[in-house]
Length: 115
Image 1 (cartoon, one colour):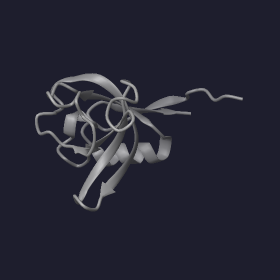
Image 2 (cartoon, rainbow, N blue to C red):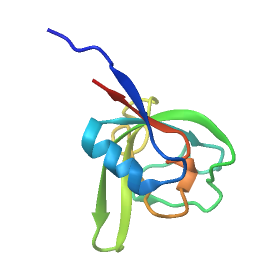
Image 3 (cartoon, rainbow, N blue to C red):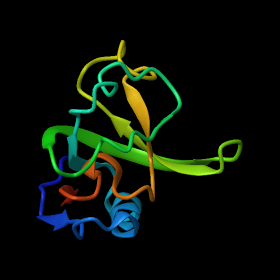
Image 4 (cartoon, rainbow, N blue to C red):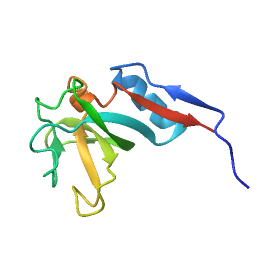
């Protein structure tokens, strides 16, 4: 048995709270992000929060699979899955700063499948 996609939920542009709601209600959310900051491709661990990673250069797609809070750093983050394989980041995942001025444009062009 399989389900068909009944529609698309478009996250309100730049609204990270709406993005969290979409993730909770629909599961993983696709998003276009900016990867032009020089250190993005070299990411290995920790919460990525480069102020040069903005919504102005969206050129890559990722899947947002979760969110969390780092109590040591007192920082919220998104968990994103990239398409570059498990050798990138934390086994193919990145912690991207949440509520940090729409870092890398994470909520500028995000959508979820409604099944």
